[in-house]
Image 1: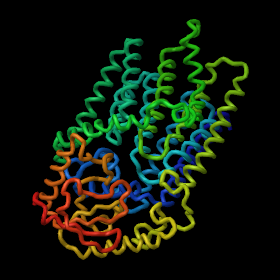
Image 2 (image 1 turned 120 degrees about the horizontal axis):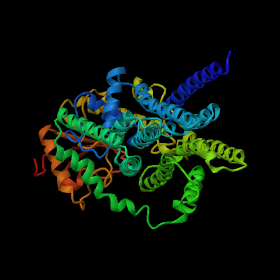
Image 3 (image 1 turned 90 degrees about the vertical axis):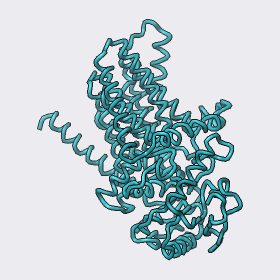
Image 4 (image 1 turned 30 degrees about the vertical axis):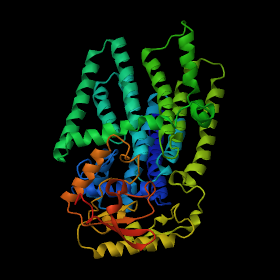
Length: 523
């Protein structure tokens, strides 16, 4: 057997292992623990999408329409189940894993090293959440766009230039930030490449790809009968109004928060920082324009994700970038022209191995992203006590860490009461799966309940738009009663800033009550 054939067999085996591992590890952790506001968000909206209720039109949303569409597609193809729901996230975990393996191979990294970095990516990327989530989807789509950008530059292939803006567009429809930062960076560096290489054809293909995405967006709005003003206000204008408040979480600049906290991420791009500094300070150092742009893009991508992480309200999720940047650093380390280049590469491998073990234990195994880090997961119970659809899900939340059975009893009581009410009703809850189990649309006027961050507070300039949107939807859908099932992770008094004291409440227990709006002047 010749060497080439042996290498091909090895590649096939390693690709098979990466496929099985990347999918199975996320399938496992997608069943471990629950954070209601995150765990059920796309489960519910994907189901709503599949039965003809669309974002921006039927409910307020500031993120994830593309992910909702994908989840609806998964449910249509494979049926509505928790397994299929988690599979959606697992497939994306596979995509980032296998793409990392191939891009490292493309940059001439040896097969075993490419496998090592890729399997670390599989362990750290989606298993932190387990279920589909906007931050993870957006990170994956942004990194895949970066890989496509590398291929477009290196291979000068017009297909990649055409496909790149489409993929970035899908990422933007998953979450605006950090995609918008990545779009600006790639756009600037692409224009630099087109100018330096005098490549008008590639520029035209990228423009064609951009127009193709805009046509897709137009058709999506047209098919869903979604007014452009609703899309633009909810997805573009309102999130921008939150920008200044989010900057308060970043500023003032503190070394401990911005640098020391992410020191391992910075270490993973040290090779690129050294190459960049050497090139900028020493005119005798020559680097191809393609490599210079790739080096710049990796450094800025790292900085942009750190900046975005500091602005987000979610737990840290970007440590999965360490094996990605480390693998690329390993690929480019030969450009350092050092006598002890093996020592550099061994250091990168040790950094990746140790950090992956540490973050896997502290962020994946401990379910930190699910707010379960200090919760004893042994106290969990089987969620099939709610419905057979959740068989195998180890149910435990931060709200009832010592008595998940009590939480399940309250949920089942609410389900029974809701099933007895045959009239159209709105359900306000983080347990958004309830409407799916009941095979009823919940008529919620927002995808998730999170005051200030999810929809306008009373002092926001878009509050009147939100208020009118809410009232018009309740009137149009002829909602008689509104049920509220707590705890709500980000809201204490839902709808009270709109209707005030006119709401009449009937309590079933301390966490479940019904609202009547018959005394409100708006009705």
